[in-house]
Length: 351
Image 1 (cartoon, helix red, strand yellow):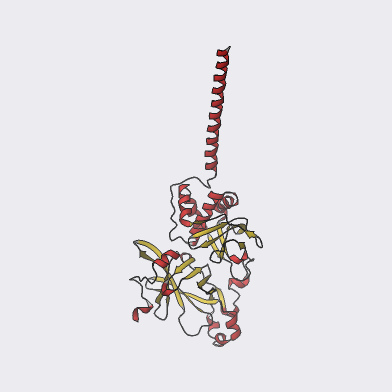
Image 2 (cartoon, one colour):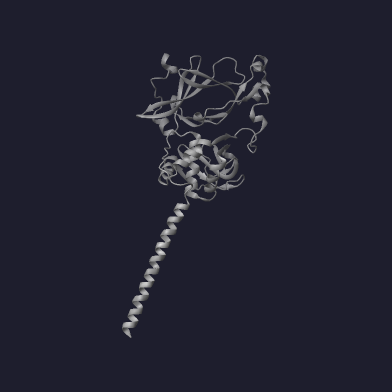
């Protein structure tokens, strides 16, 4: 009897252990399956690097990371963006009640343009991530993480190809001027010929984004959108909308001295392009500016600490002499304050 009981106990214990083992294996299998299903696309060996990213590449990296890391609406948006295209709309961060407004710009990420409350702001290289963002309601951060950490995570999950695919069709739309609730207003299109404007200027994609400089003993930033730029230097900041100016309107000198026109066009920039020293420059002058050559901007590739990096060069005057160089991170700007590159002609070279 005792042997039988002992045999049954051993057999029962064996079945129990086997059952536990099966449960453990099923749990592991389910965990593996869940991990696999959480991927946005099939894995690949393509890697991404967060250094010197264009605005389109940056929003694609952030969208891919958030889709992987947080799932839910972020993942659904990233998957839908593969069909509809990724679009990020730029608004003043004051439009929302965010716990961290970053540098004053809220990036509303969408698939095809329709907002889903997926927003991020930027502090230097760090990204503040939000979801379910609505106007007039407080929103709390999901996390703050650097773009380099995002790239490492995306590469680890084998989703680098998705970043590149999304970036190829991504659009950056600046909605910070005029009616921020309107997707496209006639007054912001620049085609109404009011005060001589005859359309917007398209800022080159490689120039779009935020740039930093510590030259001339001053920390300053410039953020270019598709048709505008925002300059910030301590207490001095402002946004300039970039338009083409009608040549016939410009021939009437009274237009330049009219105070009502001057007041109405304070934040307008007369923009055009020219080529010099093998570079394509964006020139911006005040809308009613008489004399002077304004300021010009070009993106160049320079060698910094043995690495090739993109920099924003700012030139001015009749000879377009360089006054400042901007970098894509604040740390790099501070480390290279007042650095001079041999292939640039500087304003103080003749002093």
